Length: 168
Image (cartoon, rainbow, N blue to C red; front, side, top):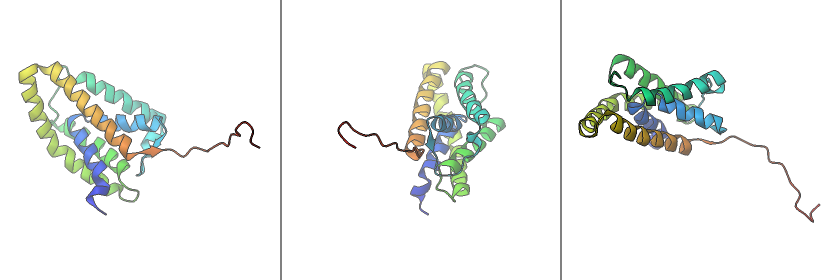
C-alpha cells in the first residue's frame, strides 16, 4: 500500500478540517448521482442518512456565518470532524484498507482544523465574518466535490443494445 492509494482519504480529511459536514454531504451527493466509492459506505445506502448528511452540510454553511458560531476547534467541532473525516476517509480508501483511510483522514483533519481556523481568523479581521465564510465555503465545497468526483466511479449500468437503422 502506498500513500498515493490513501491520498483521497487525506484530502477529504483536509476538507473536514474547515467544514465538518462537507465530506459527508459530498459523498451523499455522489451517492445520489449513482457514483460508487472504493471503500465500504453502508450508511449512505439509507435515504435517511443520505438526506440527513445533505441537510447537515447545508446547515453548517449557514450556521458558520452566525456571530455565535463556535470555533471549529471546540470539543464538539473536533468530534464532528473526527467522525465525518473518518467515515469519508474510509469510504474513499481502497477496499480492505478502510481503517487506514479513516486514520489518515482523521490525522489530517484535526491538526489542519487549527491551521484553517487561524487563516479564517486572519481573513475575518480583513474582510469580515460573512465574506470570509463565503469564500471559505466556495473553496471547501469545490475541493470536497473535486476529491469525491475523482475518487468515485459511476455505478455499473446495464447496457441495452439498440439497433441502428439498417442493422439487424
